[in-house]
Length: 254
Image (spheres, rainbow, N blue to C red):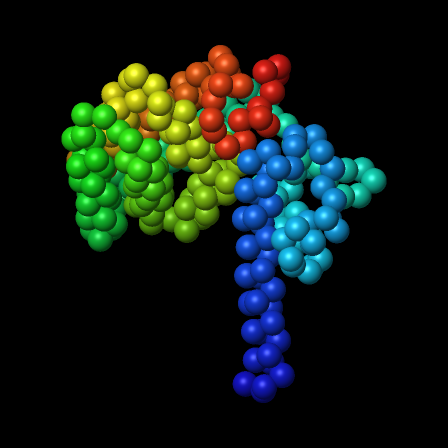
């Protein structure tokens, strides 16, 4: 391969990496409230703030627009979006529907043994966490990571690149990820109990897949997504009192 071609490939890879980093940083700024809901994004200000060139910043803003955190303005540029409770609920429902399909296909086709083994190991780790009488912040953080891993493995069980890609895309919708509302429970009296219920559902879904009970697997996974919907309701009862990234973007009105 000519040296000039190698240089171009390296340059493209570096540019893509910078765009991903910029996307992550801008998303963090939005969810932390440093870029307020409804505010117009000042591209040059982000260039100075993040210490990056305009090219990755522009790419990041375009991707966040596709992701749904930003909206394109008619006169050019982007503004931070706000979301109604209904929009967030719909995003959660979409993820649950896709994950239900993944569970059904996994049961019908038979999930890859290696993926099933990893999922079982992941749930064993969650069981170990939940043996504690009460969960501290570190335990909750560990749960969020393991929960996200289990849901990723579930998407892989269907052995469908198309479906895995769509689940990943749906999970990037604002507040729709499998762990998007888990933190809402962190400081409530029944925090551990809610996670025990979620873990029981994880086990039941996995059992349905092993038993090749496709309809049951799909129904269980759809039901599982309703825990996030329940937590959304808790958030909207008193959003000012909830310490959750991005909660300020959710409107009380539809």
